[in-house]
Length: 73
Image 1 (cartoon, rainbow, N blue to C red):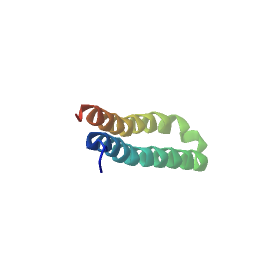
Image 2: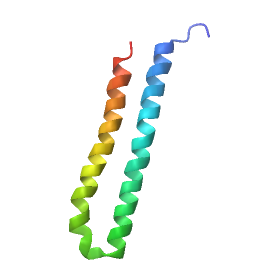
Image 3: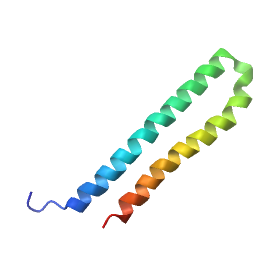
């Protein structure tokens, strides 16, 4: 593996693995929220705020992975 910079591979793996789970989580959060709003349209106001909060927490995990990828030297 001549010429391959292993730190670049480590950075790519950190962001790929760290971004995969939050992407799945945000997709599932959105799908379940839309499903529950579809079943009970009057609950849209009660579902929106918790959905956004949980999506922000899931997105924070991806941001932590990005920070770790930048800190690998």
